[in-house]
Image (cartoon, rainbow, N blue to C red; front, top):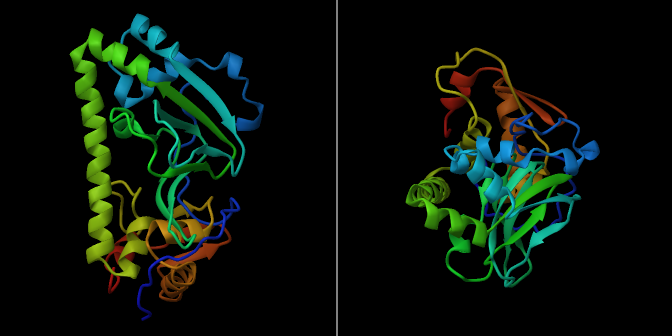
Length: 266
């Protein structure tokens, strides 16, 4: 079995390849993104389904919506760059956002992939410091930006709002700690298997076929897992040869979840 390698890919994402497709229709968001009329977007309703804002009443949601901005981004558009001021946080409504850093040698390291419903930038927004990583759209994306002044205003009106913000930031920190633990303690095969099974609900029968659809490049996902693209591809084909998955272009069919989870090294 090949040994895992640290990711060293600086290739730009082309919008093809890897990363589980997350979510489908969100409240008030049509499926066909290119034809979405932002004037008809029900922003207060959308805010109400986000965990951070779920307890707000209608007047509070309307007030918060006034401090928000919706933006359409094309594939490859930058959301922010290192060093730019951070006076807001963001929510991916549709599409996919890549958070990444660039090494002194120009190599790219993907920190996180943010799919529909995912938020980012909350903690940094409160520090008063500029962005320390880059954000870029991997696909046609609808992005919601929530301004700091709007968030601070709600915190001043209701301290419970601050507790929800802290809970959200804590969940995100916990996820990042788990990622660091996985990189340090798990083999490359374990990382790939964990990635494929990350969205599998508990209690799903182990012999039930499942599918993970990939919509960003293998280089991007490999960098996210701290692997080289070549190693990531070899592991996928190794799992296919073992009869655990079937690869069909951008779809990975998980043939036996229990066997995949118990695969040696996984």
